[in-house]
Length: 369
Image (cartoon, rainbow, N blue to C red; front, side, top):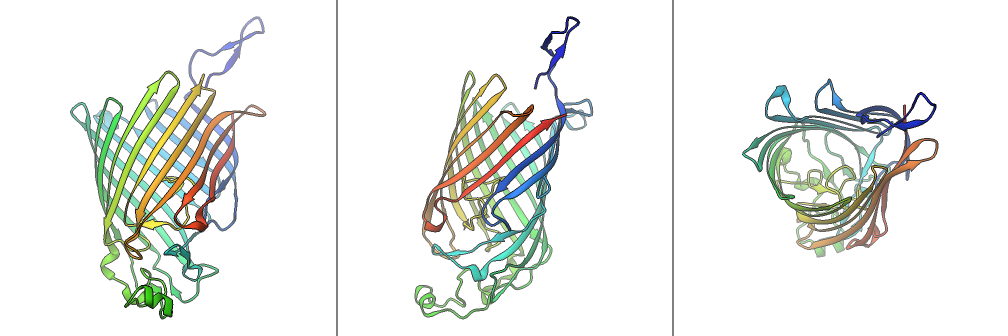
């Protein structure tokens, strides 16, 4: 951001140096599937500093009440060729973990979840184009019965530690990554549905122990207190003047995954626009993304994105299902010397019909001081 400053004649000129830190007020709205309320108001403060402690370290924080975000990055830790990042996401509201079996929602097996997460990484360059990074995620998952939960024993509230490693190649606007991590739950007692299978379920799933395949109490496996996840991705960016086109593809898979450790779409990561919190889960699948963005004089930023996911939840079916979402995001000057930011996603196609048309968004007004 650049400011106007008064001159001796009473006129104003553009300040020559760039502001790299600011305190701001924030007000906005947040929505995704599974929230306790259809739309959550956000009200709080934010801070950014792109020269923290007189160095190149970057700090960003947004305390919005219901949703709170923090990140810090140091590109030269201890003055060496090491880069470090710490990120945190804190939800002060509950999320409903929804369950779909063959496209049909099973509300009686919903679980109330309140996740909090802290992640960090430490990376170093290996030559000119290759980077190796160690990662560590710490998550606190608090499980409770939802208002619709019936004959379902919820999982143990637990800490989840996930150390991992990531390899990254960058050259000519190409980025290729491969990562693996192993997760350890601190507590994992038996959970699942106790309802005997109905005639229809028994016919579709011979030998199933309950009415919600993949979530049966009788099928609880204590070995799933430890599980592995793998991710591979490739992306390419095309830059020209103020325009950017980005193409990306990601493949994910895991071992010993259960309902609560399978991959899911989210607003703040692993995104398929329009499907955050929708209850879609999978143990193998891919996401393809195409995005276009342009910037005008550092005042207007606009992004348009198309996501296509094809995923499979082998706990309930061997069938791959498709999901398509579109999104727009941007930033521009708002009223009363504010900055308007928005990020909106819509599910335009879904092999689970109930999810088509779902929306997610975060809209906010930032006031700088």
